[in-house]
Length: 70
Image 1 (tube, rainbow, N blue to C red):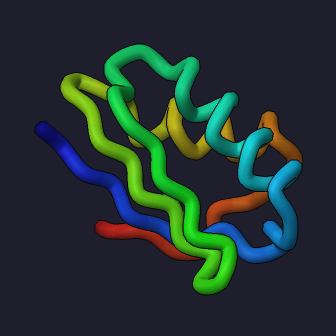
Image 2 (image 1 turned 45 degrees about the horizontal axis):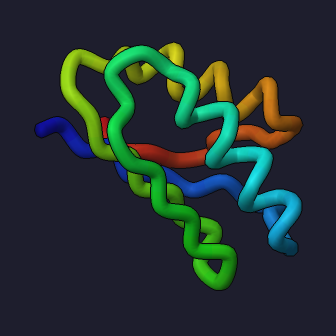
């Protein structure tokens, strides 16, 4: 199982969380998405998922990834 951990500033409410989770959850290979609003951290678990596709999903939700694992 792969893990991506990154920061998405600007998420402030349950709607933000739901939007990010819904978009990332639709990416092929993603099995689980956890959003921590307090730290603006997103943790994604999956197998064979594309980092670029996950980051694009965050963009689709109206947010931007500003830091992530290398």
